[in-house]
Length: 215
Image (cartoon, rainbow, N blue to C red; front, side, top):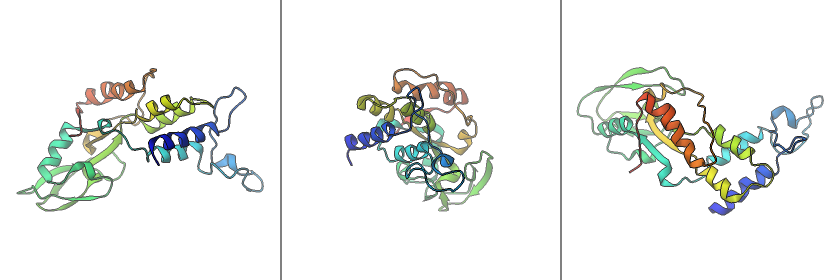
């Protein structure tokens, strides 16, 4: 599937969603697709909610290289631990600490929690990527989805692509992520390219998280 076909899929999905009396898109949720008495399906689509499906589709979008960032501290720590390329690691994938010459303490965090636990790491130890680092969406996916919902029944393909390209991700330390609020308020502008910069200026930089582009 090329980019044009992908964008058309997004447009068809958004255009097919249920609308209220004012023409505004309304999300179908789990309880909306089953009869409350018989639990028979009312419609074949949207079991997990329309926004859930959009969320999964957005994760398939191939972002431009410029949309990837890493914090200075994350890059520094990664370089001291391993010779592997951080650009190709996610989630629970493991990397080998082949650059350590002696044991060192590193701040770790389990799962999606924000409780930081120091851990002693030995040379050549195999460590899960997401115990120390996290790849996170700078602009929350929920914000992107809401903007797609706001487009109504006849989205403009060019503007849809602009919204998709507003998705920026960053590799940061779990200890840096612990400083960030779970909910980020973005004052929307007509230029989607401004959205990630607003988050960077309002949340990352004030917490001394300095982002740089992928090499």
